[in-house]
Structure formats: C-alpha cells, structure tokens
Amino acid sequence: MPRIEFAHLRAPSTTGHMVDFAIFHARANVDTDEARQEWLNQLVFAARSIGRNVEAAALVYKDGSRIKWWGDPFAVDYINKRGIPRSNYYVQF
Image 1 (cartoon, rainbow, N blue to C red):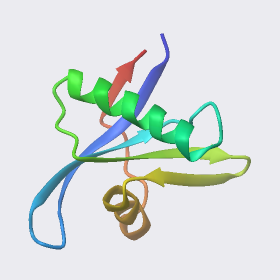
Image 2 (image 1 turned 45 degrees about the vertical axis):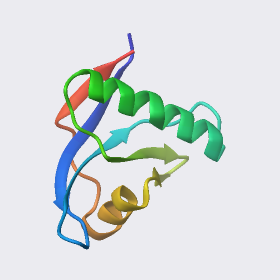
Image 3 (image 1 turned 180 degrees about the vertical axis):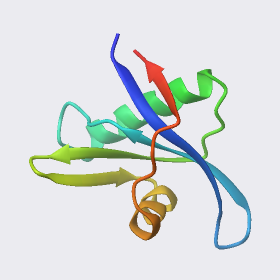
Image 4 (image 1 turned 90 degrees about the vertical axis):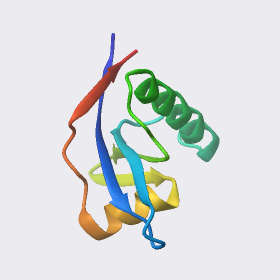
C-alpha cells in the first residue's frame, strides 16, 4: 500500500477564523487540473477518515528538478509565505 505523507496545520485566515488544512506530499498521475483536483479530493477524504479536520488542502510534488504546489488558495498562500512544512501524518492507499 502506498503511503502518502502530509502536514496537518492550523492557521488564522485573513478574517481571524482558524483554518485546519493539509499539505500532501503527492503528485497526481496525470498533469491536469482535473486530475490534481480528483487526487486532492481522495487525499482529503482519506485524511478525514483518520480524524483530521481539513478545510483546505494542497499538493506538493516534484516536476523534474522543480518543486511545485497546487490546491486551495489558502493552503497555496501558506506555502508561498512560510515554505513547505514537514509531514506529521500519513494515509495509506
């Protein structure tokens, strides 16, 4: 079973509301927004099934020698401002 690691975090939104979110260290099999969204949905479902509250999420993955990220604006903005966090949970498929 493949193991997908992710960081589960909590940070304030611009309105002060605390947002629980996940950043998954995983890449979709196909390089399209539709495939990335489907994969992200599956990962969010898996994280919720182990008890994590996930209101926003993003994928972080290697594309050749570059590291890219894609997902909900809140999670992507967090990565842009603070960098890629270390994983503290995982799900298995």
